[in-house]
Image (cartoon, helix red, strand yellow):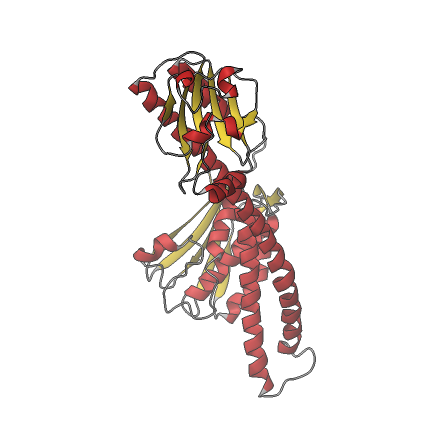
Length: 403
């Protein structure tokens, strides 16, 4: 018997194998399907997905064989991983490398062997998809091609496993990022913003002419930074599916009236007015939604309208009913959205390149967050813009119907 030599890239090969965290795991249907198919195509009693560890070969799938592993020094697969081509032994009893191999002379009596190396994207050969017979025989060209194709599918399963591990690591990193931003940025920023608010509003005494502008700058920039941090946190939680929604039956009319009160002062600071247009009938408009998240969407729509519209404009907030949906629309009469920029509106970190956006810079996240919030509540969101005439942002939510 002649043992296989050690591959030149053994260290990196083993590193990639261990990175998979697949050794000694339970059987999986995807691999078992491939070995069963390989055995049927090649007409052999045994087919294996064999992975070559430092001192053993371990079988992720073992069709027709009870054993889960054998010593590496006896492994036919240890020879097969030395090249990229299909490794075929038609009669091990006539091959000096295997004629006295314990796997040939005793169970499972490996007389015929054909193994296709499992070659990963980094050229690491981790093992083989192999078929084994107990009698001398040959393998046809069609069977060879089929076995190599099934080996490529096995590699695809292994690569997918690596990708899923990477996504798990990324998901964990997102959780750590959210925690860091929340505790190390938002908490101190909130305290700083609160202190500056007291100074800005002269709650601690009147500031002199030199102090007031400095406090104004610090207050406005801290406000913007806190907005950015909150948006980043919301977006990260939305994309991770971890933003809590407290959904309940709410009256859209009451919500819009509350939103009007919350945003009126901001509109006044932008030299605009708000006008609320509600249905004429005196009945509630019930939807199933998270009130705070809808208020967040309304604040974004209204603040955008106030920032982008012309001075002394009246921003209209209108509620209408369309069949089984309630439609909330916010309309301004500013410059509108150029056609070449309309496709960017709901893309995160994208802001319009327009001279009208000079009242307060945004984060480029608001509309993307609004879109996710509305869609997670089974709603639809959109806009219509006629440049230099008017722009309307709207969302639709299903009405709660009574039977």
